[in-house]
Image 1 (tube, rainbow, N blue to C red):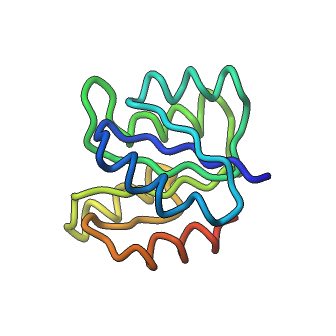
Image 2 (cartoon, rainbow, N blue to C red):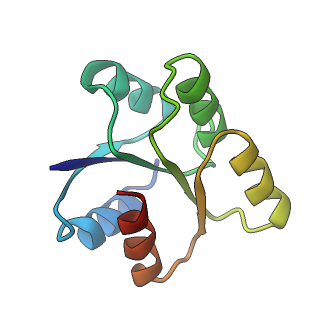
Amino acid sequence: MKKILVVDDSKSQQMLVNGLLKNIGAEIFIANNGESALGWLEENGQPDLILMDIVMPDMSGLDVCRHIRKEMNYKTVPIIFVTTKDEDFDKFWALRQGGNGYITKPYSPIDLINTVKNYL
């Protein structure tokens, strides 16, 4: 079974994503912030996909992404940013930091599901 790590500090967003993705045949794991995401990765290894918010307290999703790519050397795990930041530069910068995809909140449920399926 495929593993998806969802990194978001919003409980409602965690519940929404979990609800939308529970029927695609993947295990969903939740991290409340960047530090807990890195801890999850150290403990469990590489997931098949990471869905990550950018704006989080203490450690941004961009910082987490850079750490995953450089320090943990997870070059192949797809990282999809799911964020309220909707400027073109935000998307450009997120992809420059090592992200593979970018979805702007609020999003269409079908867009999220299709994007996830494309990366699994």
